[in-house]
Amino acid sequence: MTDRAIERNRPAMPGLWLPVYTLAHRELTRFFRQRTRIVGALGQPIIFWVLFGAGLQGSFRGPAEMSYQEYFFPGVAAMILMFTAIYSTISIIEDRREGFLQGVLVAPVPRISLVLGKVIGGTVLAVLQAMVFLTVGPALSWVGLAPELHTGLTWQNAAATIGFLTLVGFSLTALGYLIAWPMDSTHGFHAIMSIFLMPMWLLSGSFFPPGESGWLSWVIRLNPLTYGVAGLRRIMSSNPAAVERLPEWWVCLTVTILAATCYVSIAVWMTGRRSAHNAR
Image 1 (cartoon, rainbow, N blue to C red):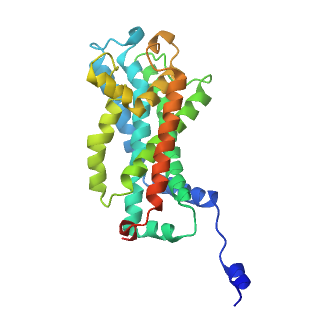
Image 2: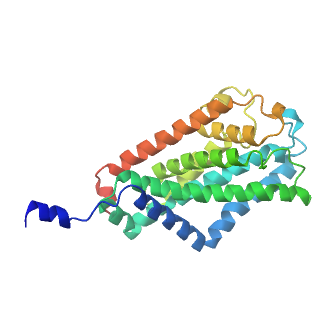
Image 3: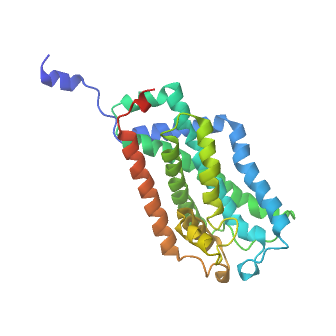
């Protein structure tokens, strides 16, 4: 057989975006078939918001005299983004165990397709659930479970909110990919979640204001998620006095984009490395 005939009979490369779409669609299908994940991803943050808001209401003095539940509202949206985005990447460990990941790795597709397929799938799930919370939250205030909110999703800020949520969710899912890729055990993943990701959320200004608490305030400033939470506050707040001490909008956007770019670049490099780990 001539070289020309061999070239003609060789299967064509599927391109970049078809594998991305296929892997992202698989993540969505898997999620919606596991209904308990939907309940857990939304139920726990809503309970946290209501209970912590009620318990800390009397002792909290936020900027511009806002209530704790109002201050905590964007932080819970970031919590939903983080939990959904990070946990969606556990499927990497399960896919390796089941042999699916090895099949993808030997397929003639760019490594960036694998990374983007997983990350985009997790991002869509995270943003959908965060949007549900941002819609349900004001309804809870109407029935008396939360005070009146002066921050949240409106027709005026809907496009900016969804866009920034997508960017933050993309960054967090890419971070979850980095953590999950070298692991063989879901137990190890949960351990990392407890000692690294939860403090990352707590030290982002979601749960309490940064203030001027010495070394802790510097840790909060160096945390990339701090700028994601601050960006959400700036978009959703209707009170300029409540966000005057936060980082500027352009700083929040720049840091979040740089973090997402860094995470994805490292993820593509890790995925492209040859190792016996991926063959198992």
